[in-house]
Image (cartoon, rainbow, N blue to C red):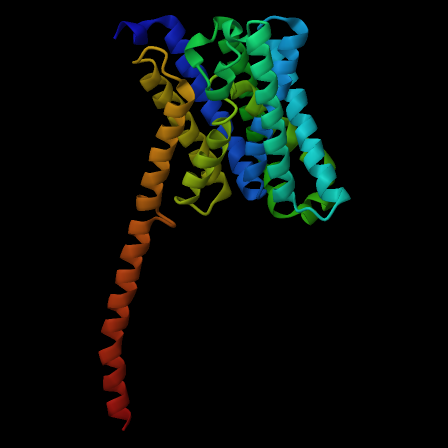
Amino acid sequence: MPILLSSNTQWVLFSTMLLGTAAGMIGCLAYWKKQSLMSDSLSHAALPGIVITFMIIGEKNLLLLIIGAGISALVGAYLIQWVTQASRIKEDTAMGIVLSVFFGFGIMLLTIVNRTTGGNQAGLDKFIFGQAATMLRSDVYMMMVLALVVVLIITLSFKEWKIYLFDPNFAKGQGLSIKGMNAAYTALLVMTIVMGIQAVGVILMAAMLIIPAVSARYWTNSFARMLLLSASFGGLSGAIGTLVSTLGSGWPTGPFIVVTAAGIFALSILFGLRKGWLTQSVEHRMKKKQVSRAAPVSRHLIKEEH
């Protein structure tokens, strides 16, 4: 098809594949840190920053909007930590509060902007569900650079991330700062979220971080292999979802990427080598046969003893 041959479509396709790869990797860290809901909270917390930045500058400058989204998401992360430490509220409850309040505030601001200053013409509503087709070449380049930064940092610091997640005490003994690692983790998470909100949207960006990691868990118990699989599933979802969305006119990219990721998740549930339904069913049947074979032998030995 001609649209698939255009250079702009190919660049967008490559950028969403990189976005999915980066999201899969940081999502794997979030899975083992048991903070999958954090990605959802910070995705929604980014929306007020986008709208407030637009209200200040009066134009859709993606770099400045991303900076505003990042600041808003970091404020949300700080509030989650503060509420957890300053009260008896648990972390997941604090995440739910921040998610609801920030997203509601963002929708309120977006409604005001759309009715007063032409926010619809600026395309701010595309940040809700994402629309990769509206991205400019400069936007694509920026997304690719940020995604590569996330991938490289996680890859080059793989050993540090592993001991930080699985053995914090050993990490301290090795001279790693837990606070520093927490800050780096939060920064990478926020960076991944804000770079993907135009392509996937603030509502569905969390799925890009959660689904690939959970899918990979059904295939392996190894952290290294899970990281690679999660990155692969995320990249594949980004590429296929974007490819399908280009076939229609005005089709939002985010939902197609998430549906693709959900399809991979369904296959993982069924055929995963570690926890897949089919694998567990086969193992259960094999154990049942082994028990049934061993039972006559046991009865025969008992008779011989008597």
